[in-house]
Amino acid sequence: MASTRQSRSEAKRVEILRIATDLFLAKGYDGVSVDAIVARAGGTKTNVYKHFGGKAELFAAVIEELCRQIVHSFADMDLDGMDPEEALRQIGRRFLTALLTQRSVRQHRVVVAESVRFPSIGKRWFKAGPESAREPIAAYFARLQKSGRIRSGVAPRRLAGLFLDMLSEEQLLRQLIAGAATPSPREINKLVDDAVGVFLHGAGSGKKK
Image (cartoon, rainbow, N blue to C red; front, top):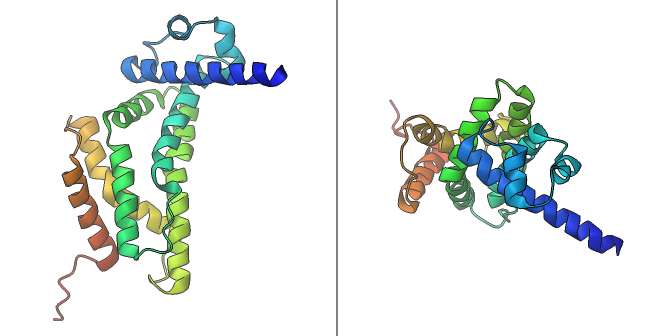
């Protein structure tokens, strides 16, 4: 009986989180009330306070869950049997495909808009998003350095940050600020191929002076 109550409670939590995500992304933090969430999810405000503590904590949970979805898109990949170039291509494609959806772009807009008023939101987003995204890639780079497949001298976590920034920074800004369209799969493949090539082989001509 207790397990049944627990499963119902968890199902309600998931439903509240799903509905709150849709509302926050569509209307921003100020445009959403707990009443509006409850009206869509059913139940009472008590459900929201029980599971999340209040609107601000629910908003933080929404942001963390959206970040986890992006990181999960590539974090569980088995990369060790691949050539490094192909491994980075696969990481890059999955990462950009998840990052550059309209849903993800709306998440970034909301976080930027609210992180001044709620600094803890920005910190939680950074930990659940950029920091978590770097971890599996940094671990992979560390293994490549140990095996001699890429040079040492730069910390693996720094390498992971440089690689993800090469992939995402310009494209994300184009969508956030300039209203650019979501890149097509073909465009994403080209972006990834260019970034991986420069990251692994540099931008020099290879000619000696």
